[in-house]
Amino acid sequence: MSTIDSSVMLLTVGDGATGRRLPFHGSRPGSGLARVPAALASVPAVALPSRPGRGDLDPVLDEQRPGRVVVSGDDADLAAVLVRLLRKDLLGAVEVAFVPTSRRSAAAAAWGLPRDRAQAAALALDGVASPVPLVRDDAGGVLVGRGEVRNLRGEAYCDDTLVVRGAVRRLVATPGPGGVSSVRGRGVIPATGRALQIGCVGATVVVDGVEHPRVVPRWVWYRHTTDWLLVRP
Image (cartoon, rainbow, N blue to C red; front, side):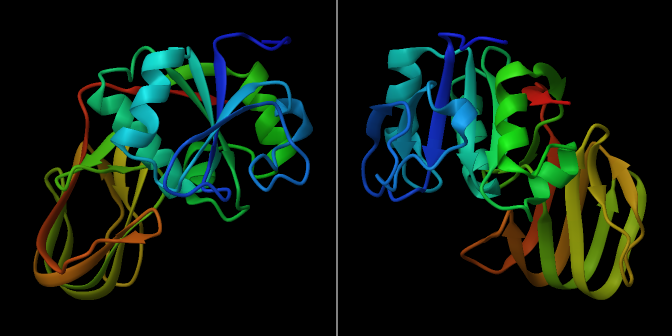
């Protein structure tokens, strides 16, 4: 995509937009809504609130029917966009590029994406999309970068591999080409598989930086049957 493809749409998420979607085209220096790299200045764009939901994003997808969306936001924003693509059965129809707003993006690290915004923008326009596993959870969300189960007392299995038994301060999970992985840590055995299942007395779960509102006795991350189309190096 050496020139701007008309099917590409930029979603600037959480950059001052609250309560309703704010449409615009191109960048507006000083607007507070479109602080995007220069490479994306001419891409048709819409500003959305943080972690956009059905009422925010679905009308955009229905009206514009993009072939590729470029998500400028944090990991939780990317996850929210993927949830809407999943719900609308568009995982195999819409390519997704990611321009992280933070160099500490776990999603960028997990998928080998540039953390520099200028480099990420160039990749978003010129890169090729390929299918990668979509990791879901049993609370209706998805995992794009880093999941944590904190203050875990119980057991965890990655497929048939026992990765935790007893009490651990933190179990970290990441998505990747092989599905979902438990990350080596104190009391945690590293493993990769289709599902990571946790049973516990009660634990706090944090997904892509967002804490689940309730302590949970169980949690499951698992590979969805359909991959998503990620633009990556």
